[in-house]
Length: 230
Image (tube, rainbow, N blue to C red):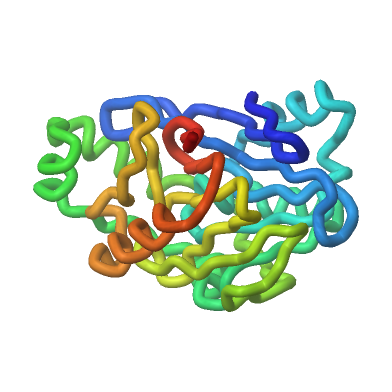
């Protein structure tokens, strides 16, 4: 767990992701738009018990989450959004271009050659991961507040950064930059999204460069390490 003033980061893990273990950085911000905790991304289905344990250690509960911001529709980000919405009556925020995907999630149709080129894995590991991620089941997500970019959520500006998905967003308060999958940081090194997982890689690279040009002290990617800029 990382704490940056009113921002806390819960780190959970997803094993067996194309031959490796993938971490997930779920961000909690005290003083959300509706008065409680603003949660940025929600993890895979099945993570709620772990999330609840972290909240309990801080003196909070799932019921204290008043706002859920989904950076994009992929299930490792949206997988618990509807369940939290049911438990705490939280408002769910996402870009308007993600709404259709959140209501009707797509299967991943990934080319093995592209995955092998980026990650260097064998076909058996590829097929096992693809079967697993396409078998993930979660409730379709109802979006209460449709974003366009430019909105202010608890002091964070919403930035539309398409590429990884059409309606991907990041959040920036001048000190902390929460990037979702628009920036990865394996070993603490900012990197663009994986090309094979991107809706439009040219736009993804443009968004990646845009985010890194912003002033920040801390960059929180969904996958990888928190990056501190001195």
